[in-house]
Length: 251
Ligand code: NAP
Image 1 (cartoon, rainbow, N blue to C red):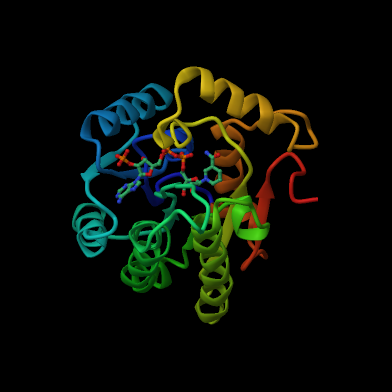
Image 2: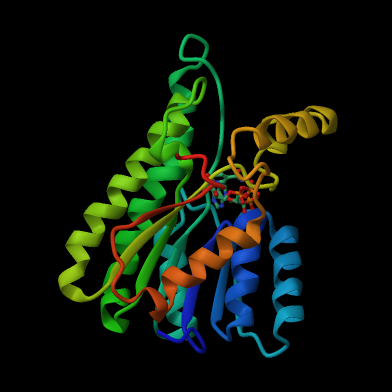
């Protein structure tokens, strides 16, 4: 599918990977629906999309994916009349040893990283079938590999990967493809949101370099490029894939 004129929802478009992905779709000439909770940050992404393509058609939806899934899809259809690509990118990252964390962390992470994706996918599916569209989920290397002190996050992304594969099977007869990108450490606000100081953040990224065989951490554009690939005709015979974008970390 050429992406020009296609209607694309990007959740979590107010920051990091989602913001860069929204910009990439705008550059391709897609009509981009920017979803996030932070309105000021969404407007910053809107400005970046306009800078990438002055004729970009954009729709901003200030929403919480854990409660507004149906409204996000309905508002998109009301405005553009169709949906071609759903990028389930919004997600949260929290850490903690099993002995220290409580069930509230489990509920927060699963509500955002899994339950909201289920709801958005469910509400979007009939529209994607109508356009023969596709879904790209933003998972993590944490879905494919096990990490200490990240049991809930890892489990949420493993669940998301299994959801990607099962949805790929359910929707394949309707010619809707479902794939996932699984990033390693990518420089975004997600690590700052853990409450790390600037110095701790520098140390985190420095240490992370060694865990990626390519010897560095990744940039949001390197994930956005793969999302564009999965949304386009270039991947027309690929569905149910979970693609590590991790400098070889999964090896
Ligand atoms: P980020 O900069 O913190 O961005 C996260 C985005 O998700 C923000 O736009 C945020 O919106 C949105 N979001 C979170 N909860 C939401 C909710 N309830 N409703 C609506 N939007 C919500 O992080 P990022 O690194 O770009 O993360 C994007 C995705 O990549 C996540 O799924 C994450 O798990 C995955 N990932 C990231 C890395 C990494 O190293 N960065 C690695 C592997 C996977 P608001 O700020 O507006 O609330």
